[in-house]
Structures are given as C-alpha cells and as structure tokens.
Length: 319
Image (cartoon, rainbow, N blue to C red):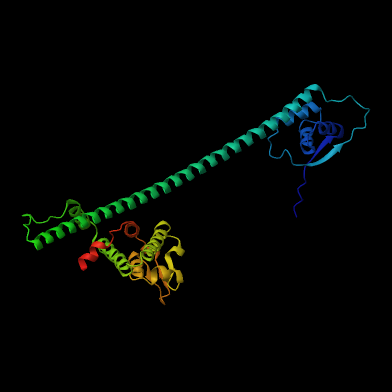
C-alpha cells in the first residue's frame, strides 16, 4: 500500500492573526497572508493580501498550526500605513463589486431594449397586415357597389328602349353597349383563376338565394350575413385556432341564424368547411385554409350587408 499523502498545514502567530482579524480580514485570508509573508509583520501580510486578493483559493481555510507567543506585551504592529492599505483594499473590493453590478445592469438594459424593439416590430407588422386587409375589403366593397350601379343603369336603359318600342317611338340607331366599368369587370374576372371566379360566383348565388328566400324578413337575412361574416373572419384572423374551425351543426343558435336558412351551410362549405364523419360538425381543415378565398367571402358578405342592390339584378333577370 502506498503511504497516504499528508495534507500541508500552515504555521501562523496568534498575535499577528488576531491583529489582522481586528482589521476586518477573514481568518482564511489572514492565515494565508501570514504564512506566505513569513509571519514577520502585519504590514507584510496586508501587502500580500493586496497582491493576491484575486487568487482562486484565497478564501479556503487551510489546516493551520498556531504559534502562541508567550512574550511580554509588545506595541501593536498596526501602523497608520497598514490601516491605509487595509482601507485601500476594502475600497478596491467595493469598486470591483460596483463595476460588476453596473456591467450586469447594462446587460439587462440591453436585453430590455432588444425585447422592446422586437415587440414594437411585431406590433407594426400586425397593424400593417390589418390595414392592408381593411383596404382590400373597402376596395372590394366599392367595386361591388360600382358594379351594382352600372347594372342598374344598364337595366334602366334596356327598359327605356322597351317602353319606346311599345309606344311605337323611334329607337336609337346604335345598340346599347355595355359601359366601360362593366367591360373592365369582365376583363378582371377573365384574368382571375377559373376556380376562384367560379367559387366566388357560387358564393354570391348562395347569398342571393338566402336573401330571396327570406325577402320578407330583412332582419333575419342581415343577421345571417353577419353571423357568416363572423365565422369567416375568425378563421381568416386566427387560422391556427381549432375552435374557430369547428361548428356544431346541432347548436340551436347556429341553426336559428344560419343552418335553417337556404344557402347558409352551402356558403360555409364553399369557404372550405367540410362535414365531419357522423355529420355532427362542420370542420375547416388547417391545410385547406385559403386566405384569398376567405377575403373574397368576407367582401361578398360585407357587400350583402351594406349594399341594398345586392342580388337584385340576378333575381330580376331570372324572373
């Protein structure tokens, strides 16, 4: 067996150790300072502490043997210079702590500033997206109103010619030509994807049928359009929220406002809702959310709510 390694110990003088402790130095530091300065004087020990205050083991207590002096009292070795050095050491420690705290505070301030910038940027992006969405809705509403007015004017012109023909009055030599806005509308529709145009037409037909089927109850029709707009708007704003993508068909309020009305459920299915197994729910799969289609649906619903001519021309032409 190998002999156990002996733990080194340090010898210090009790008198000098007491003087250093009276100056406020911890015993572990005082012991190391006396040992390494040769147990000569308090001043030498303080000088060693100043030079080694950042040592890794400065505060670890070693095994120590204390040399007890049995001598006549001697004048204290604590001089004014030692006291000054001791105060200098304390000031240096306090300064280092203060600098460290200031550094940590600067880092925290930087983190707060960065977090604030990220929050402001996220808010700006959200506001810009909302502004663009509102502008798109307003533009769609204006275009819908313009198309309705043009169709009314065209219908009035045709009616005027019919009355002249009935009264035997001379007719204009030129046939009635569609106005520029109507031609532009047809051109715009031709430039859109066929699938989107067809779905938009079917959505419009659903809303027109609903309005015509309940033409004597305008309040109920308006409430149905408003409810559909809420369903569509919730999915468009929060497509990841499952609760907005699921409607219970047996819900009494849903049945009263939408489900029992002709074209209500069909409109939701055109937007992307699907009947679940068991036919208990309407579910909108997340991977089938089409923001462009939902925006078109929202524009149609807005127009149906605010435009008094909505669906009027189509109904007359069928009659």
